[in-house]
Image (cartoon, rainbow, N blue to C red):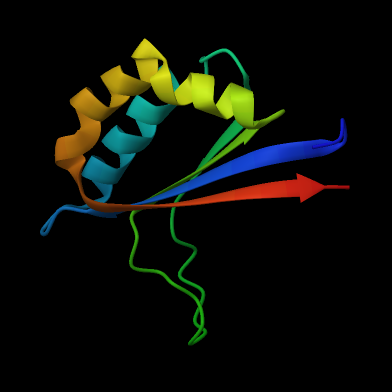
Length: 107
């Protein structure tokens, strides 16, 4: 990867059956507390479904995370960081399914 290349880690969480906005907010808050401050994270955004009404748009998830890293090594260190493991322990009961999409983006 060149110096203008970044590694994007996009994570989508589906809620437990019967969960509402409060559980989604709790999950989002857990991510902000635990994941954003991990060394190597350039930026982190937390989002919720926009409700876009188009057939090709997936709106069934509850919380989306987009984390940006300078490179794969920083991402890998993040995966093993104690705060990442703490987030999973604390919040895993809030989701029923998680999907991850990793991308390399170059300018």
